[in-house]
Image 1 (cartoon, rainbow, N blue to C red):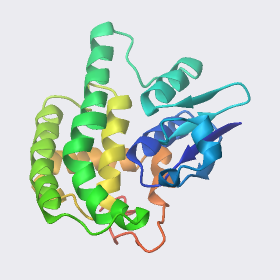
Image 2 (image 1 turned 180 degrees about the vertical axis):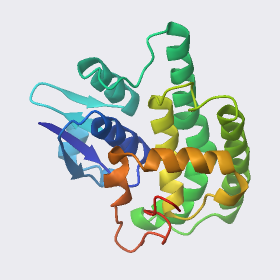
Image 3 (image 1 turned 120 degrees about the vertical axis):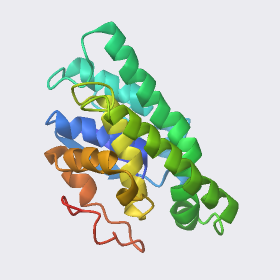
Image 4 (image 1 turned 135 degrees about the vertical axis):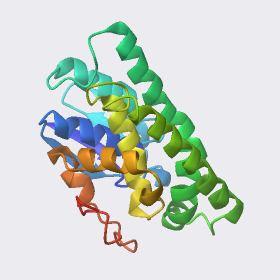
Length: 221
């Protein structure tokens, strides 16, 4: 049995949850308020971040390390291509969404609108929210560019890159910060990916005090 220490609106936790679910792996989800730096959790992961995957023999942090470990132990269905160049493209895009998208968009929108309130970090900084709203348009346009040339973000098959992107975007969709009407190809891509069985537990997430918007769990928007 796998145990995953996670937070529902952590995009990195969501990415690992998607990988586990896509591969049909049973997992016990343990919600962790990581900002409280619980001593037992800090001993598991001194960085104090979620997610953390725990088995009888292993404790592993960092979402990409966890995802690639799962991919190696449970290779089917494959979320990484066989071809080296295609694997490199998946890793490039995964890093894009985990790093650039997260810093420029997710932290400025989700971080300001929701995480500050949950963590007791004060009021949103309007300049950061405005910057996130500006940046998301750039990122959605880049996704449109990719999807105009490919079936999925990294190529002809769904990969870890799609889950990395969907994890970030699903968090923003929870707070209604994605303009679906302006990016039709991205909307079609997201509709495909959120219709997968692996997405069901994410669509069922409910954060107390922050109800889902009506469209969030609607597979047809």
